Length: 333
Image (cartoon, rainbow, N blue to C red; front, side, top):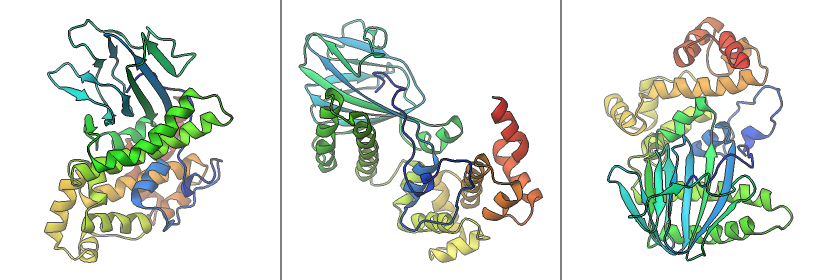
C-alpha cells in the first residue's frame, strides 16, 4: 500500500546486474535465469520501502494514487480497503494483496468515518512505522518503483488489486518471509536495511507466484504466458537467443503449434503479437546496451540487426526517436 514510498533504493539483482558501470551489457543468455527473472533484472527496480502500520480504536486513512507496484499483508486484525467505486474488500489476518497502478484508496476499520490523510498525519520521513491509538490491527507494506519507460511491461500486465486470502496454501508460504520482514522493520540490528530490501524482493516474487497459482495463470498478460507450456517455451527461446532471425513459422514449429493457433494464443496471453513482443524485448535490451556506452552498430548486431539503418528504424518504431536522438533527449531530461 502507499503508507509511504520512495526510500531505500535497491536495484535489480541478477546476472544482468553484475556490473552497473558504463561497460557494454553482455547479452549472452544466462540459462540459469527464467524469463521473469530476466525481465526483473532489466527493469531497474528502484525502490522498496517497507513500512508497518499499527492501529487501535476506530480509524480511516486515505492514500493517494501512485503508479507503482505494491504489496501489503495483514499481520494482525482486520480492516477494509476501499477504492471509491463500490470496489471494497475485507482484509483479514494472514491476507496478502498486490496493488498495481492503483488509484487513490481508503484503508479503514470503520467505513462510516471520514478518512484522514494517510500521508500527512504520520511522520513517514523519520520512521517506517506509523501508529494510531494501539495495535489491534497491524499491516506491512512495500512499494517498488520502475523507470517510466519500463513500467508498462510489468504494471499493465497485472490487475489493479489482487487479494491472496490467508486460507490459500500460497499465503502460508509467505508468512515466514513476513515474520522476518516485520522483525527487521521494527528492529535496529546491523544490516537491517539490506535485509529489508532483500526480503521485499523475495516477498514480491512470492506474491506474484501466488497470484498466478490462484488465477490458474490467466489474466496476467505476459506473466501468464510464462507459465503456459507452449507460449512460455516460445518466450524462453526468444530470450535465450535474442539475435536469432526468428519468424512466426519458426516459433510456431518450435512449440508444435500451427502458425495461426500459436499467433492467437500468444496474443491472447501477452496482448501483443509474437514478433512485436520480440521487437520490444530487443529494444529494451538495446536501451540498456546503449546506456552503458556501446556503439549503435555493436548494439544493432547484438540484438539481431544486420545494419544500423534497420536497427534505427526498429528503435524509432518503439521509442519514437532514433537511438542517438533518444539518448540526447534522455540526457537533457
